[in-house]
Length: 196
Image (tube, rainbow, N blue to C red):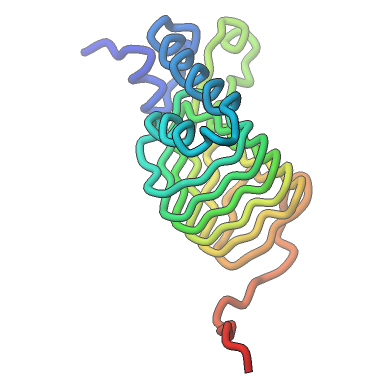
């Protein structure tokens, strides 16, 4: 049986040691890119944005406001028209996938990482990671937290301050700690943009 590296274990969702040298180096590269982006003067924001985007697996036309932090970057996939406001954190030990037209308000945190409930394993420094998947046209409100393993359906709205620890159906609004459905959204209506 082939022995897996700690990075392979991480990407497969198995217990792994984040203290592994390769993973430390990967995080250092991401931290340096985030620091460069966050400290760039406004006049250099576009070029700093391109440098940050080079970390990501995919980000066709994302726009991110400083400050922004991620663990690795290479596990992040952004659809078209992705927008993240100030102080967004994405801990991407597992894949974090965003659909098209996703908006993150200030202070949003997405974390794929978790630790064992068993104290002996946790004290050894082990952790696990499970993917987060965000559908199309999702709006995540200010200060919301999305936990590992969560999938959010298309057109959903996550209220400010919500802690999302389970999947969210499409066309729903969730709020609270932990987040629960507070209403359905009717996305069948058409919005007129013409002035009469």
